[in-house]
Structures are given as C-alpha cells and as structure tokens.
Length: 549
Image (cartoon, rainbow, N blue to C red; front, top):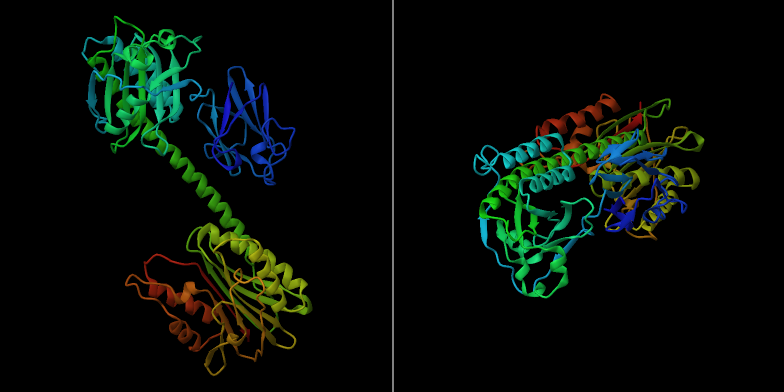
C-alpha cells in the first residue's frame, strides 16, 4: 500500500496510508487524511485526492483555493505519482511512497564486529573513465549499459536508486537482496530509500549491518564481508538461517565533491558463490555512475524548488504591488509624488493614501523591521489595520494606538514598524501628523527653509509597548509648502566605498529650488541613485512628497 510521509507541519515524520481506490486529503473530518490540516483554514475542506488506476496512483486537485503542487509544480490536471514525489498542499508537504523502505529494512546491531575481507577507497566519481571489470564480463557490461540508459531517462531520485538496485541484481546472480540508504542530517546513519528482492513474492526484510554501514560512512571506503553467518550474535539464531545471509558488499555513494550521500548494499545467500574483490570493483563502478546521476537529480530538484520559490515571490510581489496606491489623490490645489523600490522581490516599506470622511486623506509611510518576505507580511498586516482604524476612529492618534495594540497582539517576536501619518484637510489646509518612531517628515517653506516636523509628538514604533499612546502635531500647510516623507533606505543608501548618503544630503536636496513637488521627488531619487552607483541596494526605499501648488 502506498504511503504519504509528512515533511512539515503537525504531520512531520508521520506516515499516512493512502486509502484505495480513492484517498481524499483536506481539513474536513470526512477526508481519509485530515489530521495534518486541522486548524488550517487555507487548506480546502476537500483539497486533493489520490486515486489508484491499475498499478498507478494519480493525484487530482479538487478545485482547492490555493492549489496543490507536485515537486514544486502546480497541479492543473491529473498527475501520475512516482515513488519519492513531493506533494505540497500550501505549506504542508509530504513524500509519496509506493512502499515503505524503512519497514522493509532491518538494521542489525552486532555483538562483535563483522569481518571485513576487503575494502576499496572511493574518490569523487570520474565521469570520463570508469572500470567495469574484465572485458569478458559481457553480462555485467550489458547490465551497466542498461543501467546507464535508465539513469539518462530520469531525474527522479527513486528511479535512479531503483535502477541501481535492478542493475546490481542482474550483475550479481548470487545477490538475493539490495538496499540503498541515504544520509539525512546524521553523517553516521542512513535512512532507507530503496530495497529490492530477487523474488517478487518474498516478504522478508533486508538485513543491514549497522557496523558495516558506519564503517563505510566514516571511512568512505567500499567493503566486502563473507562471514555474516559466523557473527557471534547470530550463530545460534534461527533468523540467520531463514535469511541465509553469508556474504555482503556495501559501497558508499559519493558525489562529485567527494561527499558521501549514502550507501548501497547487496547480500548473498550462496555458500559457493560468495562475492569476490572483483565483484566489489564492479559494484563500485556501478555505484559511482549512480552517484553522479543522483547528484544531478538533487540539483534538478533544487532548481525546481528555486523556480517554485521564484513563482511564489513573483506572486507575492504582485500582491504587494496591488496593496500600494494605483494613483495619487486628486485634490484641487495639491500635488503628490511617490516612489517605491524593494531591496528584494518584496519589501517591508509601505506607503498609502487613505481616503477619509470630509474629503480628507491620510498620507502614510511605514518601514517594517526585516526585509523580504517577513517585512512584506508585516507591511501587509499594517495596510489592512491602518485603513480600518483610520476610517473608524475620530483622530489619527487614536487610530495609530489601535493599530499598535493589534500588532503587539499578533506576538511577532522581535518585529516592529516605524510609521508616519499626515492627515490633510484640503478645505482648511490643516495637517495632523502622528509619528511612531519614524524619521520626522521634512517641511519645505517657499523661501527654501527646511525643518523636520512632528518631533514633539513622536512615540515608540508600533509593536513594542501595548499601552503606548500617540500624540498629534498640527500644522497649517501654506501655499507653496511641500512635505517630504521617506524611509531610511534613502538616507542610509550606501555606495561602494561604504559611505552613507546621509540625512544632510536629503535635506539639501529638499531645500534646492523646488520646481514643484514632482521635481523635488525626482531629484532626491536621481541623486541617491547617482551616489550609490552600481552598489547593491541594501534596504527598501519609499518616498512620498506632497504640497500645495
């Protein structure tokens, strides 16, 4: 029976049987597999189904809200599953297993050390030259050629490992069982990844010596043992007679950098045809070629995951872009300018124009701690909370206090947001400023004088103190005056020499002959870009300018 092995979430490490002929996955309790999704509202009630069709298993997405992925690719039509495929329902991941290699593997802890008759040192595989034994070994050569053809047809790790085991049983007629274990975090042990029996109806597990496996992993050398039956632990045991194991070969799987990926083992029950050192050389050659292919499959999987991550980030960028205003407010006698550029695909800086009753508008600039996805998530939370509370509370100070309480309540440890809000009343030209730990907006007067405003009402950043209150500073915006609000991505922009652009330079640019709100904004962006040159952008950049014409 096929299995799903949890890779993440509450089902991590657990194994779930795939019901036949149809197994439904979802968060509703009538699904065959539902416990890993309890409490996850983003998982659909009936999210996906695995159906058995002949000897194959087919995965279908059941019209879920957020989709189902196989090996990083979105499932748009039924997909035939292979052993080792990775399934993802949102962030809950599973490995699909046609059989359970762990259940078919029995590790032996010997009372004494098994005798090792010969060893071979394994170096990083040389893809140009691999010895395959004497030229007369036609059968062995043909088996290796067929294995190579199989390796070239698949980039799936389970297929590679199964091809290796199939080839080893063809190369060594005396071999009864084969086993491959892969390293997963612990360099001294392996996790069973594939097993094979010469007789398909054989139900016995493959016996694997921990002593030999540890020796192979620690030394990186292939070993051959011919006295398993004589091991003191099993001398009087019935099980050794049942398994009839008398000879074992165990070979490390080594990637192109010389790192040990795992081990491959075959065992023999033949007393007369035990493995020879020449057999060990042939097995090393076959395993080296499989190791190269396994390295390629891992690179391929990493590439698929990177592509999936890039798709997710591109989607996140589109979502975040849609949170930003599509156009500035249309207020007679006022002009607006805005600029936004994330340091990564998505960013933690945020700006907005929030319409309020009485034709008022709130101009918002915020900077969430962290960059990339973490900052973007915080900025997205802030966007919704601000719009709600600015429209509901009678004053911007009260609204910011509410937003702060919500962010503190979210318990995002170590996260905070700096925020500046300027509410404009176009009828009275009154401007109310609330500052939560952000840099003070700069006010440019018609004579070129520039001063920071609202410092007397500056409070703590959002997310630090649950009971923080936020004062308001009020100003009358005169004709020809301009307000500039920005994040520290501007004044802390750094060039190749490690120099910061600095707040003084920003102030000087604001003070220059304005030419209007738009010209001030363009001038700041242009000069910062010129200063930074080809140095990488270190932080998100957000800028808004507004004023009376």
